Image 1 (tube, helix red, strand yellow):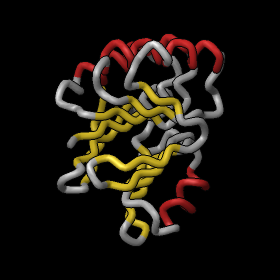
Image 2 (cartoon, rainbow, N blue to C red):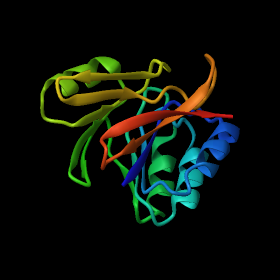
Image 3 (cartoon, one colour):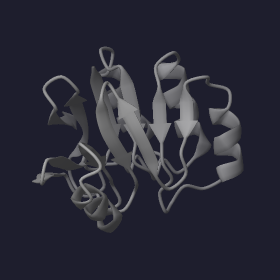
Length: 163
């Protein structure tokens, strides 16, 4: 199974469109926060329609009421609050927005993959047997726009640059 992991889109709908166009073979999407506006949720719901989308809150997500209202229109869109604990294809996954929390989750030994965002910096390391992963920023403010692809069979991640 293939999981796309995004973070820090910050309303850059143009980069989001480019990234989503590359995800036709992706089974699940995870967003690590800082969507910002409700229209980003609508775009994710429209493109992923029948595929699961898991979202955690970032520090810049505004209009939570409208984000929740739009997300409720999509059967497979899940808003998890500050922390998501998922099991996808026998992979134990934790998702949050903050690196400090992510490091603790990875060190706990309870997860195979821990995803986070917030600092807009690609990060990929092993903490024990856990992969600690920041897909970088989709926004592109500090350089290259990127997201990650995680393969549940190989348990490996690849950073994908978005044109």
